[in-house]
Image 1 (cartoon, rainbow, N blue to C red):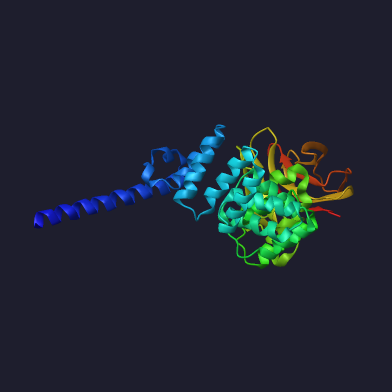
Image 2 (image 1 turned 45 degrees about the horizontal axis):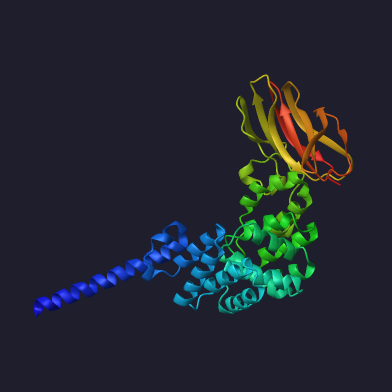
Length: 377
């Protein structure tokens, strides 16, 4: 009898272990869809989601619907199974069944991306901006990414009512804050961008300001310089003030001017150091190469019209050159280049050139440049 008890205990333990392993394997298939087809039939639950999606992807709609229904039978409470049923019904042209399944799915949870996206789209079409904002916010908080979420967010924020509804929901957000703000920068006006960025900041959201600076260049080059300035001012500027745009040469680690601060590209044969020059931070450089090297560069927002450029410093050898590149419809157009001298130089910014890239280039020689004064208005 004791031997029989031990056998029963061992078999029971083995059965529990196998069940635990099977359910864990099924759960893992949700993170790695490639595992789904290897999950034993008796343990399948989450695996049905991956296999149904795979069936829809290859055009096997009937198989996808069958797998989705099986998922609902095995796990009737989660919303994902019903959303897959709705997707299959839509693909088969059965709009009534799709709508019923979608409504049931929406009532059961907020974590299914297809359901959230569909409800958000319907809500925006019906002018229900609060509902749309809630669903889109839920997708961001869940960690969703992709073109569909970007499209929905862009359409929501482009409407004043949608922007207001979204801002109302902002809290102490985390990892997705930067991607959302970058997306908004190519959607909103500068005024609306500043308001949204300030909302994130005031509500205690986690904003990676160095990360915004690192990725802002591409958006500025696409012609959204004023919006990037509004974003930086609202989210990262000191006490909400506009980013510095007319500062001296400061080591990048100490520069608080964000996307519009001076940058110092690394180049062979070019050395730099930062020094104090008559109470002003200056850059001392030496180029041992006969070719021109970029000593410093920065983005600027000089308005169309006349602007005076004034340099302070001294030069030994080839005089540095000042170059201005304009961004127009994602194209770069060099429209001003002159040799730096002791006198002010006047340039004219053309209409349509809202964002510029400024480069200071030097040939062989050494020099020391203090603040570059540029009239921004």
